[in-house]
Image 1 (cartoon, one colour):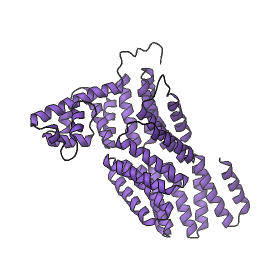
Image 2 (cartoon, rainbow, N blue to C red):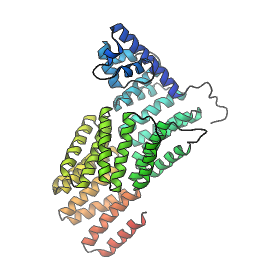
Image 3 (cartoon, rainbow, N blue to C red):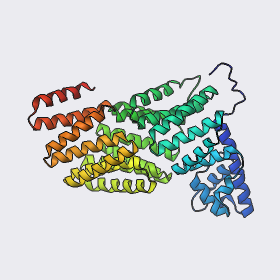
Length: 434
């Protein structure tokens, strides 16, 4: 905490959100009473009486989907339920759009608020929402920029929990931007702040463990990642469907990386069911892609194609080209496994183009590697070597595990073509990347 900063009069983000939830609840109650309906009648067909009661009492904030449903049932509109001249209401409306998955509208709303040049903590809270929205749309640089400034402002104001949330999204931005070392450092620092004197909220601690496990899995340390995920599962936090779905999806990633495909399918399907129940379309598309990779690993190309196609369609509806680049690469792998080398090359080229457009280096490296394998399958070793040389240079900027895979592939190709000294040297470099 900075010397001289008075924090006793400041209210936490959670406290202000409770205020806003209570005001939304009061508006809902008033609208229901004007409509002459009971809570059970308002909830019928989609929600429960208990859920409506919790909303009216300000215990939770509604998603935009819930607001739309309730507004129609009450003969009003979401904007009427949210309308208020106070600036923070504009922020909470953007936060609700963010929570409902309307990423671009959330970005537009947060940016409009920033254009009004808010100062202090209000600016930090707007930046925090903007950081998450940018992350959801696959914009790593923008995520890092917004989260970094939010963290600085929260820290200056002595708001510990809010600063921690900003650093969480800062770590997410670095992970997306293919900087696993920085992401790992930030997440480990956040977890180290958990103590008996200053404990992390259970839900937030679970999120940190899941995030760190994801970083470790992608860095080639799946066994360590699974230990963290089991720790997260054992904390006993009262997780909602979306958080449990995220935990199960992370477990699926980890199990696939360790070769336990049966466990990967079980947790992956559990995750998909929960994401769908929570109307989390982006996350559902992501786990569909993961299931496609799991079935591909089992040699079940039919189910692999089915899940990849579902992921492709879902991401097209969401206009999320960042993750679509990964799905196109998955489809390229499936085509290659099915012997359709031309389709594999076509999908890999599409993935590479989209990855470059969106700055998704992970997808770009994977797609180029798959394209090189398709060239090898066509006996076009010259083209395969050309691609592998380019992808090796690109992979040097990312995790060691990814570079090791590329160098190994290149070494095998050179050995096939008779260039044994060069193959040995590449193999030596790959083995050194521990």
